[in-house]
Length: 223
Length: 324
Ligand SMILES: Nc1ncnc2c1ncn2[C@@H]1O[C@H](COP(=O)(O)OP(=O)(O)O)[C@@H](O)[C@H]1O
Ligand SMILES: [Mg+2]
Image (cartoon, rainbow over all chains, first blue to last red; front, side, top):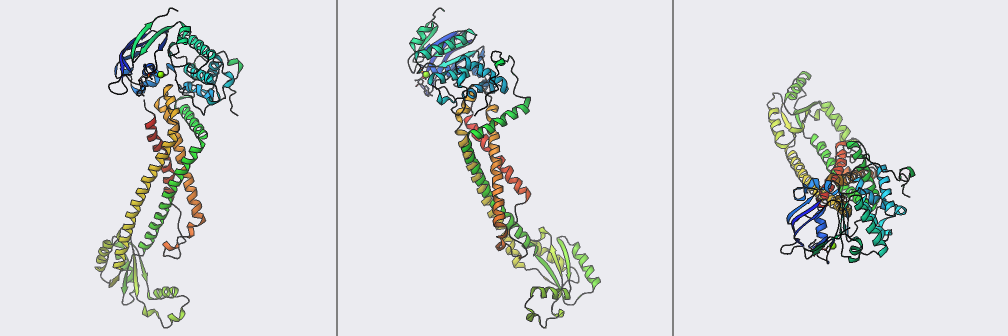
C-alpha cells in the first residue's frame, strides 16, 4: 500500500511541483497518473522510489515511512519497486541479457539462476531472440520492453512506469499494456504516469488527474 | 561471440528457481563477483583504462626517476662523508706497543668507527700507487719524508661539522697524540651542502607527489564519470553503496598496480639502457660504476604507492557519483 499525506515538493523556493498531495493506493491496485506536461507526474513517481525527498509531508510504502528511512536502507526498499524510466536508462554497452540481469546481480544471485530467470522474462516480453543484442540496435518498443523486463524480473511489489508508451505505435502500446495487466494480476501494484488519454480509456482503471501539482480529479472506473 | 548458452537448457525454461543460490559463500563469493566485474569493466572500457594506466605509469615513473637520482646522491654523500677522516700524525715512528695502546684508547672514544695505523713504509707505498706511471716524481723520496699516522673513520653521527670538532677536542686530550688534521672547512661546507640537498629533495618530492595525486585522482574521476549512468542505474535497482563501489575500487587498485609495475619496468629498462653507467659525474670515486638501481623497499614503495593511488583515487571519485 502506498500512502501520501500532504506531500509538497519544491525544487526551488516559491514554486511547488507538488502541493499538498494526499492519496492512497491499495495493494494490488492499478492506477493511472495523468495530467498535462509539467503537472508533477514524474515528480510524484520519483518521490515514491526515493530519488527525491519531499519538502513537506509523509510518504508510506507498506507502512514504512520514507522520511524515516536511513540512506543505507533505501536499496532494500528499491529492490521491492520496479521502475520503468521515461528515458529507459538502459546501458548501451551491455547486452539485453546483461541489462536485465542487473536487477538480480544486485541481490547476489548466481549466474545460472540469473540466466534462467532473465531468459524467462524476456520470453514473456517476446524478446528471447534479442538477448545478445545491445539496446541501441533495438526499436523503441523493444527498448521499452527491455526496461520493463528489468523492472519486473524480480517480481516487485510495486511497478512504477513513467510515460511508458511515449513514442510507441498502437500495437506496441497494446503489448505494453497487456504486460502491465499481467503483472498486476500476479499481485504487483501498478502506477503508470502518462498523458496518453487513449491508453487510459482502453484500460478501464483508476485514474488520478494532476494539474499544477494538485489532484484535480479522481475517477474510479469499475473493473 | 558472447557465451550465453548456459540458460538455454530447455529443462529449465519453465521451471523457475524458487530459492536462487547466492553467487558464492559470504565474502569469498562476493570478492570473486566484484573481481570478475572489475575485469569485465576494464575489458569493456579498454581505451579509458589504457589512458588511466598510462597516466599513472608516467606519474610514478617521474617519482621513481626522482627517487633514483636522490638515492644515488645520498649514496655519493655517504661515500664522501666516509672521507671525513681524522688523521693524527706522529713526528717519530712510535713503537708498536704504543700504537696498540693509542688505538685502544681511540677506539674507546664515542664516535670512532675504525682506527688504522699507517706506518712510514705504508705511507710511501700508497704514495707510490697514487703516482704510478710518474716514477720520475718518486726519485729521491724515501720513507723518512712521509710521517706515520693514525687514520680514524668516524661513525655516521659524528661526521657533521660540530660533532667532528668535539671529537677532535677529546682526541687531543689523549696523551701521545700530537698534530691532528681533519679539513674543518671542507667538512662544514659538505654538511651544509647535503642538508640543502635534502631540503630541496624533500620539497621537490613533496610537490611532485602532490601533482601526481592530483593528476591520478582526476584521471580516475574521468573514468568513473564516463560510467556514471551505470552507477546511477545500479543504485536505482537497489544496489547497496558497497556493491556499487567495490568493483570500481578494485579496478582503481588494478590500474594503480599496473601503473606501478609499468613504471618500474620502464625505469629498469632506462637503467639497463644507459643510466647505470651514465652517473660517473656524480661520483668522485673512479671505482664506483655509475648509478645503482633503487633498493627493494623503494621498489615495493612505488608499487604499493600505485595501488594506494588507485584506491584513494577511486574512493574519492566514487563519493561524488554514488549518493543516496
Ligand atoms: N529537476 C528539476 N528541477 C527544477 N524543476 C523541476 C525539475 N524537475 C521538474 N521540475 C518542475 O516541476 C514541475 C513538475 O514536473 P514533472 O514532475 O516532470 O511533470 P510531468 O512529469 O507531469 O510532466 C514542472 O514545473 C517542472 O518544470
Ligand atoms: Mg514527466
